[in-house]
Amino acid sequence: MIKVTSDAANKLIKKLEQEKGILTDKISKMSTFIVAITENYDQIKAEQEAEFNLNETISQIDEIDKKIITIRHAKSVFNNSVVMKNGLLSVTTLLD
Image: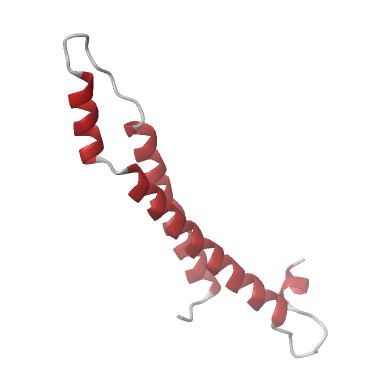
């Protein structure tokens, strides 16, 4: 477990969301392709599948989602459990 500031956590979440966006864009681009009538569909499909592993990409997206959820949860727990010096207000209450 690492300790980071709220700002660093937000930057990490943004970076992870960008990585996820790159992977989802890759899925979108690789999901369709054009084959000419004179080309061999099975051969081109096999070449596409060799370049791009959908299951591996989905697995990477799932891992990124887990990391994002973990970071957001940790921020939420911190904001709801840390009480200011007066003993009455949490960080979340102060931000509302």
